[in-house]
Image (tube, rainbow, N blue to C red):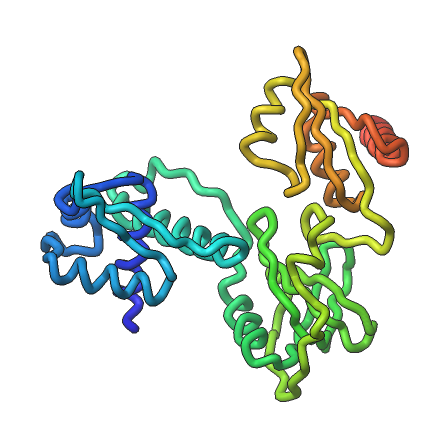
Length: 297
């Protein structure tokens, strides 16, 4: 299927999602002003064909309310499929918006993000074919590059705008995580492997914040959070286990997860707005990190 047709599908789904309910006339007016139409209205027949294509490709049904003549979306998949679709929609929507805003490009300030577009397609292909991949890796915390790293890729994960591949390292005989932007000379090995029947990416990271895992047990964590920061954490929960207990001048946020460096760094990034209440060992780690930082001054 032509890439442009898929982009049109995504534009239609994204537009209807954003408006909630919209008539075909309203949708058509937005379509004419988009970068996909070339100024040509969408005919009733074309819209019908696009609806069928969207249902087949994304399992999304665009329904019509006969009393208001408005269209709305039903039937979205849940779980990881829904997250993947939302990521696809967000990316395509942003791409289209930027394409339509070239005349104000000097007023759009973007963040410089390490790119994974070179390595991600190779890794995704290896996931589909269950082939091993070989690459060189320069870790953030090491000076020398490791060459000839061979893994059996199990899954990929997006965290804080960086892509990671998680797989079984044949030399170390354990599952490890690699950042795609630190990988080079990535090639697909001809040797295939069988995915472990008991591995599930969502379960593997269930008790993790970020991409770091732990051999220990997940712990119950309580954070005391200022009122303003609590609004932020409600909008962007740190973990799926997050629960909130609201008080007059603060909130207590509870979690169940591993006490990894990723999580400690996240706590420290919020400064005085977040205090560790429990467990005691996490509180001690944060205090130690704060003292080390203060000693630099």
